[in-house]
Length: 101
Image (tube, rainbow, N blue to C red; front, top):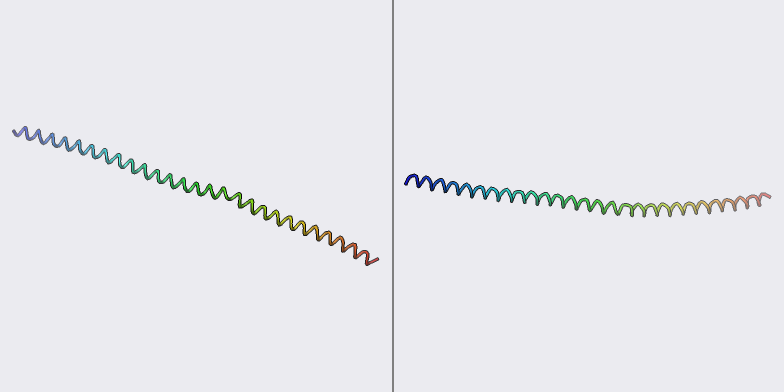
């Protein structure tokens, strides 16, 4: 009978060991899933950051084009002013010469 009880204890311990192995395996799977989830979240955050940077960079040429257009408009206005000043200067020179004669 003592041998029978020892055999039962061994079987119980073996069953507990199998249960522990199963629980350990399940925990490893849960840990791996959690790790993948965290990694995916980090990737998603990085993707969002890159999308924001991409949008900013995409808008940047538009802003630069607008500034360039404004600068070109101002240059054209200054060129027109210079042309008008030169024309007026030529007219004044002619008038001064006419007055000197």
